[in-house]
Length: 342
Ligand code: ATP
Image 1 (cartoon, rainbow, N blue to C red):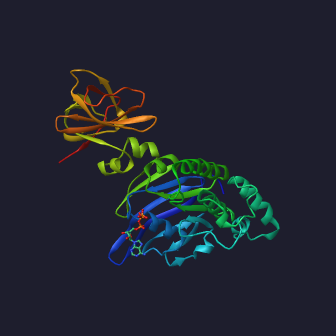
Image 2: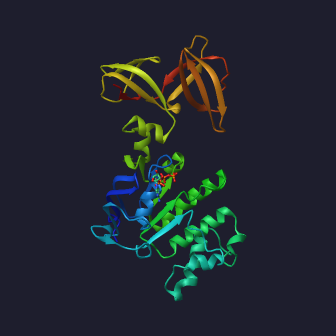
Image 3: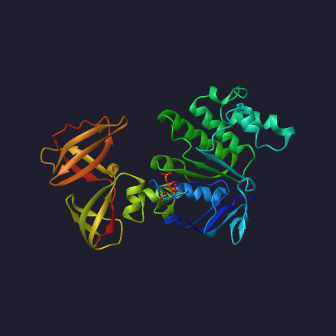
């Protein structure tokens, strides 16, 4: 398959459960080697979308094609095991009575190649020498890697991962993110990854689909959805925000921060999107903001400022000395985006 070929195409997917519309008119397509992260709050339809693609659910409307073949819709329904899709779902536990090798080799049809492929996969996921262990002799993180190797073993066109790292500690989670990215990119695998962790989505996805209420609110690169969200809802879902009320006239917003240029062509009553890291602060006895609280986060600190009735969150390097109760002067690093309010 050439690299521009579409591996996954979902068109106008819809799925209802009783009176709940879990997936409501979802469309997207992925080229070979691309990773899409579905990001959104609990109940927004991420898992249902993934289950539709895997074939564990049948869409009420819409079509799905994988590597050019229609697998659902238009009267067609191909069973999950015939879709050439690898799944890493939490409820798809490893076979507990089998060894690591047996788990990984389970989906490899050609017995001549099995041992060689299992060895290569063990190496790929960093579990060399552990093939003969039983599943219960592995840590949670090692089990996650076996699950990933098992999903990769039949060389699927597509890999679907549903919160695969949700039970892991922060260090292991971060390590496995690197490893997953490395493995998927090395192997040129196309993947859909479900998470409600926005950092994880931004870190892993070539594309992010920001979802709410069964719909995709915005589909874009991590930079696009973070820096240029199409709505206030998307802005809230992908990162921390400050919303500052303002009035824009000829590209200048008047607000509690004074007069600031805005980067979007709107006029009148607006709210400005200002991420905590887009604000700089300097101690100043006559500064208009007061440091109310701060959280030390390691490399950065999150500082809560008050300006009259307004509360503003600012992210600054942790070496910067900021005293609670002191006054600071605020400046912006970028012209903010303005969203019309009515
Ligand atoms: P989470 O992050 O909590 O896993 P999600 O975004 O993956 O959530 P889904 O599991 O896709 O959300 O659920 C979407 C909606 O559909 C929810 O309102 C859920 O209650 C409902 N739903 C999902 N599966 C079923 C089912 N089998 N029967 C009835 N309702 C369901």
